[in-house]
Image (cartoon, rainbow, N blue to C red; front, top):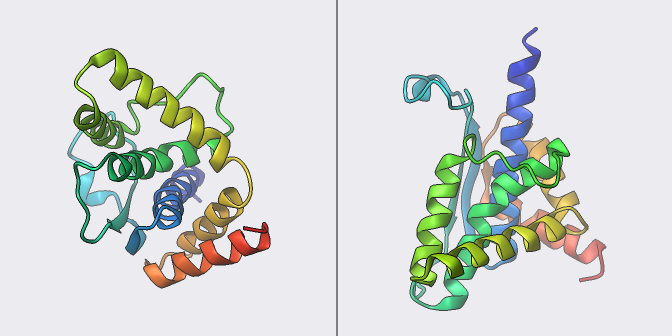
Length: 176
């Protein structure tokens, strides 16, 4: 039995569940979230993990230049890596930028649209990460992420309605 690939699949499940749950909670329609075989991506870069997941986030008709929309997108982009980080119980100061480089590239692009000054971009990124660490590690977000990660581990793609059901269930259960 290949324990490493099972572990990677679990990490990926939490990662994709983070994107989906936070995006849905912030008002996005999640079209689909799934885990996929990494074989199609194995030749891209040797230093990347051999795992791949997919979360299709649909914001609908929005103004991409509106600050609130940029913030929602940034939080949703970073929610995947932060959910995986929380699941791994990593050291508070160690976030694996290399493993999640595609997410970081998207987040940096989003932050550049929010502010031109590099110092402010760094501050926005730090604040978003700090906020997500607190939100994701606690109810209702964490149990919703864990429930979706469990469902993803079964292997089937999850549709947006199921993601929305999990958000509603865990938010109600937590008194929201």
